Length: 161
Image (cartoon, rainbow, N blue to C red; front, side):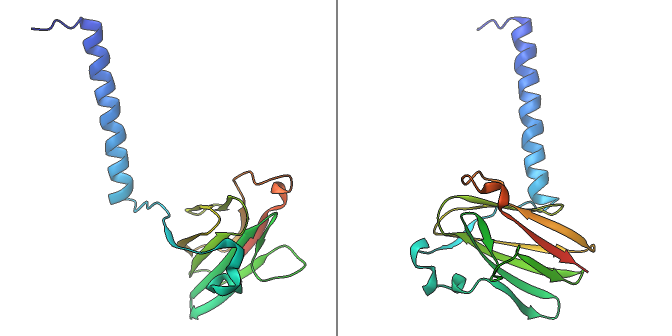
């Protein structure tokens, strides 16, 4: 029989309890809180986006309180189909927004503050997430992946009335 020192046994038990706690938190986040990883819904050639649904980025209304936002991230801006100004969209509170996004050049991030939207936009990969805006306010969108010298300028706004 193998003899395990008392302190080693305590450490093994402690590590087992901590690992069990991590597993319980992971299972609870999926089953109780509905946390889902953003997965790519498709792939495109980032040099030929004009042949895809992302050729015309912008906001479209699908039903009374449901919208789709198509976004193309590129150095150093989010293209919402609005020229010459900071990208901004306006929604009514209670609206659901499906975000469909990709990158044209390098890896970018897409983070909507105070919401569970945090996507990595990889060139050629189409990412999609759904979000519901229940409270009025101004929510900033930032690029959280360093993408080059103009990275700090990659901001946009969602205004919820």
